[in-house]
Image (cartoon, rainbow, N blue to C red; front, side):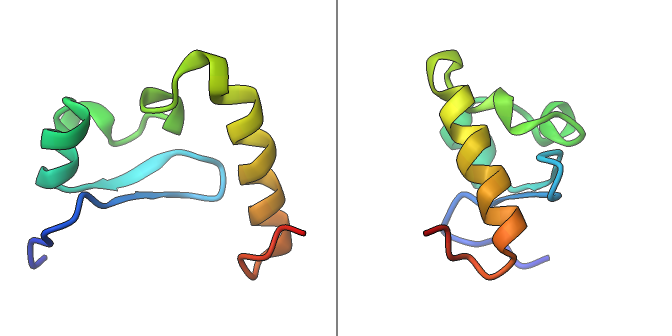
Length: 68
């Protein structure tokens, strides 16, 4: 995989992290080996998780990126 200048994190529709680039390691402070297989809670502060997951589920249900 070609390394991007951006930090890239890819997660399944369930919120499980599957790709975590070296730039994500630098930005978030977690090694890929530790992040992959975890949920996005790893990088979402506790006080924002309920809203994050509500929006995430809505985006996944919409399937087209639109969450009216």
